[in-house]
Each structure stands twice: as C-alpha cells, then as structure tokens.
Amino acid sequence: MKRFEGAITALVTPMRNGAIDEQGLTDLIEFQIASGIHGIVPCGTTGESATLNFDEHKRVIELTVKTVKGRVPVIAGTGANSTVEAIELTESAKASGADAVLSVVPYYNKPSQEGLFQHFKAILAAVDIPMILYNVPGRTVADLANDTTLRLAEIPNIIGIKDATGSIDRACDLVARAPKDFALYTGDDMTAMAFMMLGGHGTISVTANVAPRLMHEMCVAAIACDGPRARDLNARLVKLHRDLFCEANPIPVKWAVAQMGLIGNAIRLPLTQLSEPFHGRVREAMRQAGIEV
Image 1 (cartoon, one colour):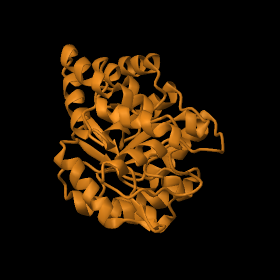
Image 2 (image 1 turned 180 degrees about the vertical axis):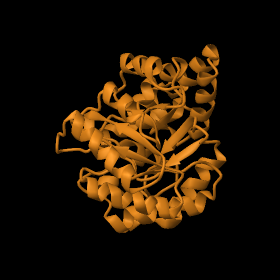
Image 3 (image 1 turned 90 degrees about the horizontal axis):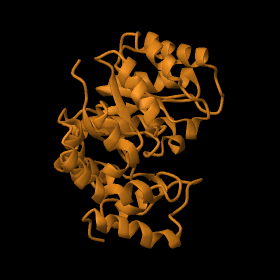
C-alpha cells in the first residue's frame, strides 16, 4: 500500500455538555483538510481516548471516516491495555472504513518484549488491516524496543511506527535498520523536523491541531531536505511544540483550539482546564505561529 507521509494530525475530540460534539468534530476535520494536512488520527492520546467509552470511541472513528470521505488517510487509534479490547476496537475501525489503525503499547500492565510482540501479533491475526505501532513510554511505562519493532515489522500489515520518545538516537537506529517500506513517524513535535531530515516519513502531531498549514509546509520542506526553509518554518512553531505540553496533553492544545473558536472549551475528567497562569504562555506561542487570539 502507499505509504502515508507528512503532517498527520492527532486530532482533539470536541465535547459539549458531557457528550461528543459531532458537529464540532465535523467542522474541525474540514478545517484540517482545508489547511492541507496529510492525514488524521482520531482517538489517539490527544483525542482523549482513555476517557471515551467504547460506543463513543467507535462513533468518533466512524464519523471521522464519513466526514473525510477518502480525501486524506484516516488512521484510527484503537490501542488498549487489554488485547481483547484492542481487537474489538480494531474490528470496529475496519468496519467503519479506516485506512489503518494506530495501536499503542499496552499501558499499566508492564508486559515484557515478548508480551508486546504477541499482543500486536494477536490483533492482526484477528483483523486484516494495516497497523502503525505507537510507542510512548512516558504514558505507557512499557517501552517497545527497536529490536522488537523490527521483529514486528516482519509481520504482514504492520506498516510503521509512531515513536514518541523524542530520541534522535533511536530514530537513527530505526532509519538504518528498518525495511525500506516500513514507515517511520515521530510523535514528538519538538524533534519532528530533525527526525524527518534524518529519514523519517512524517509526524503524528499535536501542534498540527493549532497550526496545520505551517506543520504541512514544514513537513514538506523537511522530507525534501530543504534545510533553510524547514528551519524557518519550524522557528515559528517551536514555542507551540514546547508550550502545548506545559500541562499534560491534551489540556493545553484543547484550550488553544477552543481559543481559535474551532471547538467548545470542554474537556473530560480526570483532565481539567488549562491553569490560568499558562494562558498567556500558550497565547504567545500561538501568536509566534501567526495565529491571532
């Protein structure tokens, strides 16, 4: 299958009155596509997947696929710390028409490397759909080693990895050893430019929620190894890369998107609204990226 490249948005999930804001989600997707984004990930970390019930999770993916209508790839977040639950979500994403799934390392359980291998293998034994692995040890505790990633890369339908460690050393190792058709994405916006210029294929981005056009342009330049242009564009984004993590993701990015008038200002417990002392900091980062608030 054709490899997905460039700026892929890890989309926030709009909410209103305690429920999913379906019109808000539709409008947000249209904004992203109009801004040139290369793909959309619903129900990832940034989409508050951990606070969505199964029906909500499935509905967000279904509505995203329906709204996108094939204009960009939809890579549905379907990971879980239970292999059985991950299979159920993956089956639903396939039935909804997602192009691929993003499956996070099982969290809380602290599985071994063999346990991680068997978890992902079991999902794809049950569901025939392209899968991108998602390694984010800061969230999951368990860390998918590069050697295990490369072992998994031999399984048909495991087409790539989102590495959110921010480690350039690990990225260089994957670039050197991964199969040529294995897609390498970063989940760390601060190191995304360097990751792509070293041979990565794109970023699954938090920043792209707020500045999709700039992220699109920066990724195009970085993948083309146009260093001067990539650096100039990234310089406008660097405060967003940093300050959208001044509190736990997705607290700051959801607040920022709400300030843009794109969604309502709602987030689900146990997450809370962005603390007032950080408001000015995030606003300044948005202004540096050319976003008026």
